[in-house]
Length: 337
Image (tube, rainbow, N blue to C red; front, side, top):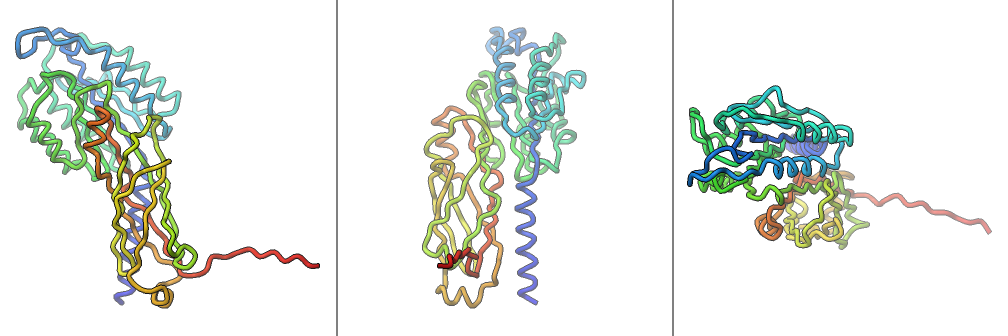
């Protein structure tokens, strides 16, 4: 009975890993289009706000055009005192046609309404109405200021709700565009969130997704003593930093993996350390058994500082490994003399 329960649990783990790998992605751009973005408001020191509107439009379009996966879904939500529903762009897929439509509508969008900025309401609206829980959601908030209208809770508390509204795969990126947008409590709040971050330069922010191979195999006879090599596919066009370090971990009854390795030529390699002798494994392992290997980026802050804004994300963070306890089939060709 215990063996049956173990097998069921292992199957469920593998199912969840495969399901995570097959999830699509939705990118949501929450875009502050209040008039302060065009330099038509006052900063805390009384000086006019900087006119950064065109720069932010360029940054938005660059982010959209940088997407490679045509199945990624894009939504752009312009907001001031609430989301401008008449200006919502998408959802559209990141095909060339879709990206052209999105960027064209971003550049043509215009707002001349004088109103206060409601960041809390815009974030709450995204969490309540625009997250697709069948997809991985990445939310980008572009704003040049702070909350200007009354809300039932302060902005840091609204951001903390992200943990409960979003899944572990989702991500929130707060792009603080000016000094007025800079807020130590917000930065501290997002730093404490495993799936949130702050960027202060719209020209440099970026998320680069690395997708590990969904399934690897290891034959305890044929691969014995060999390091396992796993490929990671880059899902954007950007140049990768040279020092990406990844922790590889697994702990089972038969083997352990615990290494920090460096990504080279889109690959990592690590050793699998078995706890028993080969003969014991041969006698006790089934012909095929499935396990999960966990990945973690260990130098995210170093990379972000080095590149002034690049965030590397591993997605998914697990690899399914099929352990094989039988000789691999070989083809033998005999030539008659």
